[in-house]
Image (cartoon, rainbow, N blue to C red; front, side, top):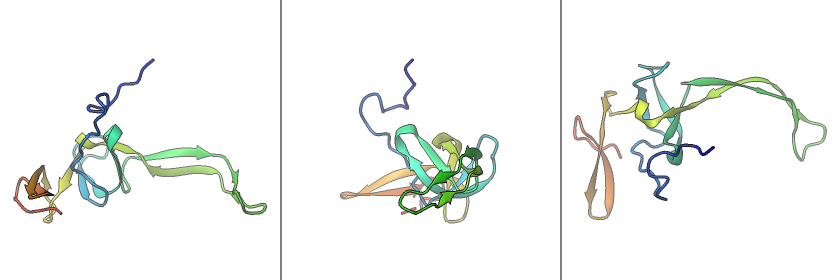
Length: 123
């Protein structure tokens, strides 16, 4: 059974995302709606972002031996970590902390992200 791919992946193109790691974002839908946080990681080919402290998931892990160290074991148990959120469910926050859409402007060969609401540069 074939998995569905994100738009742009089937044609070999890498999807363009306007949200980068380190950005402040606000979740606009889902169980964490209304919360804000910093983007830790971006996965462009699946169009997902990982936001600090949001969409927490639990993983049950077994104790494991640490490679290279003698008789050291890594603790097992329930580990909580951030889960992925689709990029359409978050909005970038501008310098004033207001959610905004993002526009790309070009000056020569440089690309800049610009807040649509205020026109201020984000980069």
